[in-house]
Length: 87
Image (cartoon, rainbow, N blue to C red; front, side, top):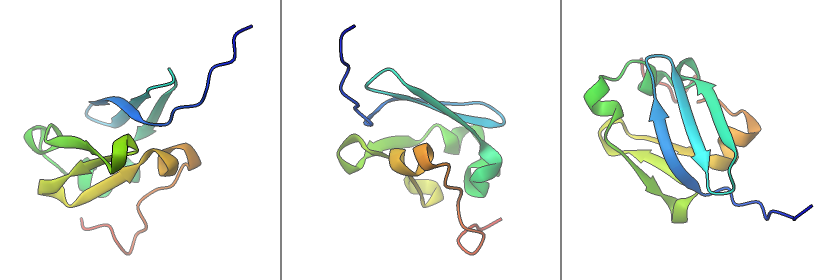
């Protein structure tokens, strides 16, 4: 069996009405509910589509929503703290 090195950089981002899916460079896929990120949950489809990869490939940034999500946080299952969530 060939050893595959972990690579937690973002390859692709997909959003549905209620989920965020992030494909990583090493082939893993992380899917989380948008409810974990209220700014994303309440955003318009146009706003959701305005994401960019940041942090050397280890994060996703939505300038218009002032939202940043790291692959480390996704892998840990970290939600936006309620004190930071703006509904």
